[in-house]
Amino acid sequence: MRKKTTVIVNGKKNDNTRVKIVAVIILIIVFLTMLVFTILSEITNNKFALEIDEFSKLNSKTVFSIDKIYMYNSADADSNEENRAIWNINVHQFTDIALYINNRSESNVNYENSIKEMYIDNIRFSGLEKGTPTLAFENVQNFGKFSNIEENVIKDRLEYTVINDGNIDYSKPQIYADCSNPILLEYANKNIKEHEIISDISQELKFNGELLRKTGVFLDSIECILAFDITIINNYNQKFIANVYLDIPLEDTQTGDTIYNGKYIKKIDNTNQIKFFRVE
Image (tube, rainbow, N blue to C red):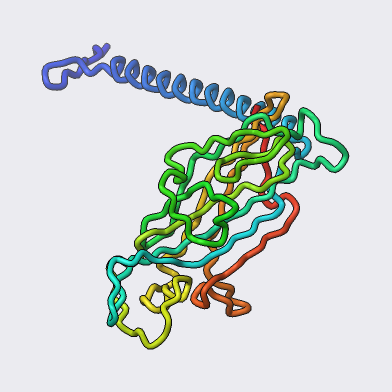
């Protein structure tokens, strides 16, 4: 009978056992990784579903919303130097904003639809090519003109004092608990043009939106989306947040009305235009 022959490769016995063990280990690692990933995904999905369900329960009805917005847009300037022949100015564009809160208090004001605390924060500007944007509290007496009050500029958060009755000091950020007065703000885009020389003094220089045309400011270069959050805490200590996004209006392409004419006014009047969502 012929004997079995053992083949030796490079002086070692040809044995696939080690390769098989390594392959099995790799397969086990892959399987365990996929299993862990599946479990984590399932946990995350379940958590997200619970959060959505909880959010839906908290917002089964609308308590606060912004239903009316009024925006007055114009321009102004600082005079660096004035003489008989020329003007030397820094040009600014501003938008005064009035936001009216609807708290659905037609029947009565109660703990749910009245304000205990309110503040504005998380301010953002996007899309702007020229100038330096700011957002400030606006005094109603200055509405429709460029205030440029440095101490009113919102650095981080604007806290409102809530007034239950009596008179409001409109020079300070105050709001009635029943939401009966609007939120007044001033968006300003400063120094769009600096030390701009206007030598044509044949006509009166008007410090309004006409300055943008006279100094060659293209409207698309000062288009801006203003965004900020308004937080309301009611007298049940429930927390509501509105994410406000406003396109700074400079012209109406349908009517041809434009800020170049001196001023441009835009009114928005829609139910639930901006909704406050309850988060706590």
